Picture 1 (cartoon, rainbow, N blue to C red):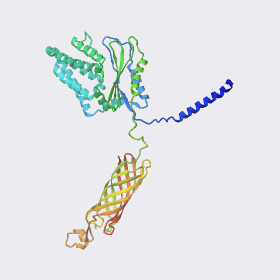
Picture 2: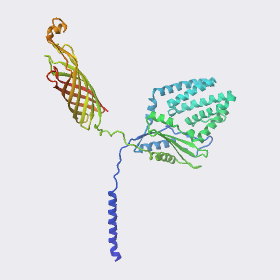
Picture 3: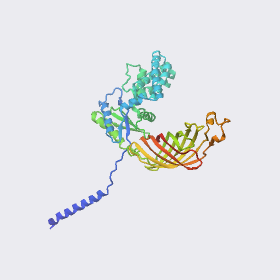
Picture 4: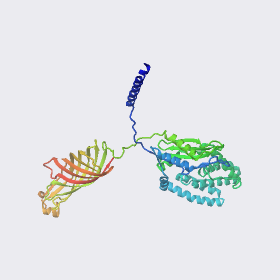
Length: 496
C-alpha cells in the first residue's frame, strides 16, 4: 500500500512547490536599470613610481606598465566609469590658463639663473630664485606633467641650503628641516635619483638618507594633498583621480598604495595592500590583481546619480521660457495719406509654455513710420505696441509652427499731415500755408486685436523665427487716422 500511494504523494508535493514558486515569482519587483552620469577617472602619474629602500633589492620585479594597463582596462569595462585618456591630459596642460602658463615660463627662466648662481657659488641668490621656481612650479602643477624638472629644482635647492649651513655653522640647525623637505620633494618626483656615498659629499648623503627614511617610514609624507588633487581635478575636468605608487617596507615587502580623490564629493581616500610576502616574489598577474582589487572595492561603493537633464530626444517644452529679439516691417492698411506708408520695427517678447503646445506671450515693439512718396506725412512718428497673446504650437523636428491671438495696447507720438503743395515745399510755418491744410493729430491710445502666425527653425536653445502680424483696430476705431497694422518679422529666439 505504501508503494502504491508514494508516486501520488510525490506528484502532489511537486505541484505544491511549482505553485509556491509561481506565487513567489509573481511578487518579485521588476529590475529598473536607469541611466546614470558616468564619472571620468584618470590615473596619475602616467608612470607609476617605485620607492625603494636604499641598498635593498626588491623580491618582486614589478612591471608598472602591467599594473597601469590593468587599471585602465578595469575602468573602461566599468559601466558607470570612463577613462580620462593621456591625450586629454596633454591638452589640458597645453591649453592652461594665463596664470599657469606664465608661472611655468617664469620658472623655466629662473631655473637657468639658479644654475648660474650655483656655478658662481652665490648660494643666497640661488635659494631666493629657487624658492620662486618651486612656487611657480606649484602654480603651474608641473610636477604632474614634468616631474623631472621639479625634482631638479628641489635638488638644487637642497644643495644650496647645505652650502649655506656649511658657511654658517652656528645657524646650521635652522637649515636642517629645509634641507630634508627639499630632498623629500626630490624623492617624490624622481625616486630613481639616489645619492651614494663616495659620489656626493657626506653632508648631502646624510641629509638625503634622513629624508628618504622619513619619506618611506611615514605615509603622511607620501600622501597627496587634497588641495593639490582638487586643483588638478578642476584643471583636467576629471571626477576621480588615482594616485598609485609602490613603496618598499624596511622588511623588503613591496606595498601598493593608492590615494583616490573624488572631485564630486571632495573626498580623499587612502588604500594600501602588499604586493608580495617576505622572501616570496609575486607574479605580474598577482600584482595587477592587487591593483584592480583595491580600486574595485572603492568603485563598488561609489554613489552614481542620474543625469541632471533628460536624454536627447526627450526634451520637454512644458514650463519653459523663451525670449524673442528681432526686427520687422509694417504698414497700415487704413491711412489718411494717398500713398501707403512704410514702417520699420524692433521688438522684444517673452513667452511661457504651459505645456507642450499652449503658450502665453507678451513684450514690446517700437514701429517707426516714415514719409510717403507724395510727402503728405510731414514728419515721421513712432508707435509703441504692447501685445498680450495666447497661442498654440507644434514641434516637427527642426521646425515649430505656431498661431497666436490676443490684444495689442498701443500709443503713438504726434504726427502732422499736410495737403497743400506750399506747405510741403516751404514748411508749415510759411505765411502761405493755411491752417486748414495742416492736420496735427496724436492717437494717445489704441486697442487692437492681433493675429500672429509664424514658424521657427533650429535646434535648441537657439532658433530663427519668421512670423506675420495683423492688427485689427478695435478702439477707438472712428477717431484713429492710422489703423490695421500689417507686416512681417524676423527674429532670434533663445530657450531657457
